[in-house]
Length: 142
Image (cartoon, rainbow, N blue to C red):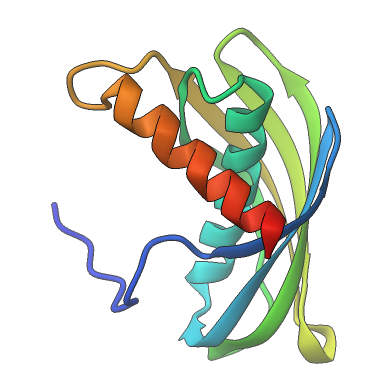
């Protein structure tokens, strides 16, 4: 299966304002993007927190969406503040409550399960650790 979002890039999070052991505060800026990209931005924010928490030693991905409330919009426009709070975890999965607030009351909220796995031949450890550390550093400097 091939999914085409029509977006010029996959990285949606544009800045990380703050991070603690259980929380991350970030931003995504949209320019007429489809509504589902708000959910993707929330998942990327939570997955970035997981990667950072694990010192980038494991691959992190959206495993499931337990709940998601989307605003009634045709497209997303402008800056959205995204706050993700860790609510539970096991050795390989992390539950986050995530909220995104945008212009004119365009708010999202979701409960997301972020899974992790060891790097392997498909997800190459050396290149992905360096890749996600570089992304983290750039998002913190913006």
